Image 1 (cartoon, protein in one colour):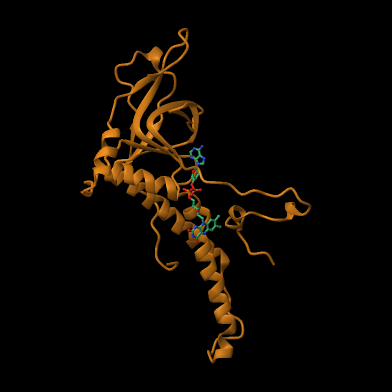
Image 2: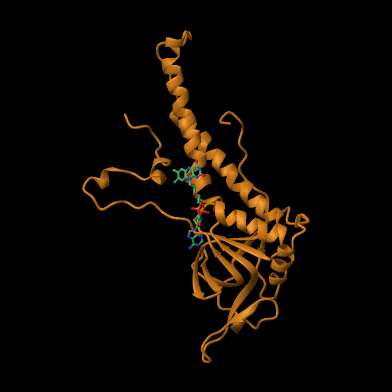
Length: 251
Ligand SMILES: Cc1cc2nc3c(=O)[nH]c(=O)nc-3n(C[C@H](O)[C@H](O)[C@H](O)COP(=O)(O)OP(=O)(O)OC[C@H]3O[C@@H](n4cnc5c(N)ncnc54)[C@H](O)[C@@H]3O)c2cc1C
């Protein structure tokens, strides 16, 4: 896996979200970039002969942008309407969003504040297993002489080379996730979401503006974060997130 060349970028079209027909006073924010991949033709949903499918499908119907309820003195805020909004593009959010869009035809939006693929791809399962392989190879080489292998006494390794390959593999996976979402017709917004109404979220855009999205159904799949215990010595430790940022092995 490490020896393969690892292309990174995904082909994408950026589509500005719609504000057609609204007087400018109704437009509260700069429009966000919503990303769709080139392969955005929706994959035909597999035929699932269950009554559950039809009952769920009935719940998911597309509707145009609406305006969020505000006090009567304030201008309404434009809100983009979705059948299904997923907060967090990790393992859980990605799996659920792809099923909603690909199987049930729901107009789906994924909001991701970090890197696509979440913990498992970026700072979990994937880099952990690659690092485990890196360490295991070293151990095997070390003990190989005792099993009759004619390894030299000292075999050098290049951690920097390994880390660059590992990072490149993860970047490639980020693109694969986003392309898969695009194939299902899922919109992707990069930003941090927060609830402003029970079924309306607000996303902070990179330029400091905010945009609102309403969903008939909203999945909170925001994962977790490391908890550093308040104990003496904790400042000397690192979390697994920090572990994958180490540029050089400790002496
Ligand atoms: C070191 C390590 C090794 C692991 N190894 C394995 C393994 O070998 N096998 C295994 O099965 N599991 C493993 N896991 C566990 C696995 O990574 C998690 O179970 C899985 O990633 C959880 O998926 P999730 O979708 O719930 O959350 P996450 O993958 O954490 O995704 C949540 C996403 O939500 C985003 N987000 C958070 N807040 C917001 C917000 N307000 N707005 C928008 N986006 C937001 C985050 O940026 C993140 O991308 C490992 C975990 C770690 C830390």
